[in-house]
Image 1 (cartoon, one colour):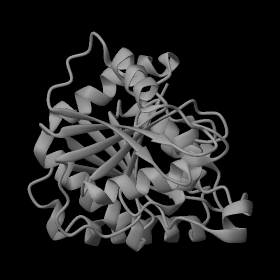
Image 2: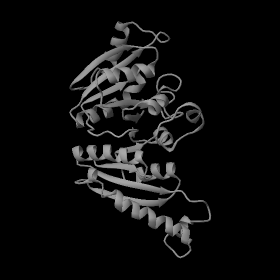
Image 3: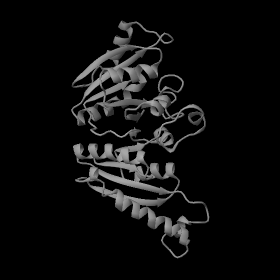
Amino acid sequence: MKSILVPVDFSKQAEYAAKVASVIAKQTDAKIFLLHMLELPTGIIDPASFGSTNNSPTALLFLKRAHEKFEDFKKSSFLKGVKVEDSVQFHKAYDGIIDESVKQGADLIVMGSKGASGIEEMLVGSNTEKVVRNSEIPVLVVKEDISNFKIENIVFASNFKFDKRSAFQKILNFAQLFNAKLHLLKINTIHNFETTKDSSDAIRNFINDFDLGDFSLNIYNDVSIELGILNFAKVIDADIILLNTHGRRGLAHLFNGSIGEDLTNHAKLPVLTFKL
């Protein structure tokens, strides 16, 4: 891993994400690229004339303040010893994050998120969810302040269908970066029941021919897939949850319905998605 992109809107959640990114950067000797997107109304800034006298004083004031905030942000103690670059750009947040991740050749995007519930969850499509849906590189979503972040126990939850194998090596590579134990997890529910033997056979067929290193194979029963993943993660004291996404309707097709979106919104643990 060489480059980690961290979108920064100077919120607490962005700081939480940057803290986690700094831990990963220190362990992998990666550079962190901090990105702030200024979404100004049309007329205040003309992107084609950025940096010229044609830009309004209002736009230049926003730009100056953003750079001042970045200077303070880069003095954060958790960034000490990390190679850091920063950029302020006039762009819609979602488009700018995706474009910049490609331009910078980023290996990982780490984003903060407040999560959502109830009517807000139904009506609001956050920039984080849009990035998860469309990013070609892994996206790590962080919602809480983690004082001593580590990656020792990883949960990889899947239905272990063969069409998910295409991204599995990326998941193994991530686990091996941190010499972490990978806990393979299949959830059984009353509505989607499978015998232990069938579930075990499905997982073993899925991992056949891969070099997994330290891993465990787990079949967990619960009332829903989402709760099963969250409860299992608590049982083993997991540090992070890994998921695959097709990129259709965010994480909606991870298993059935909107399990992936629910996890991204509700899980307290960091959730890392890999696009199939």
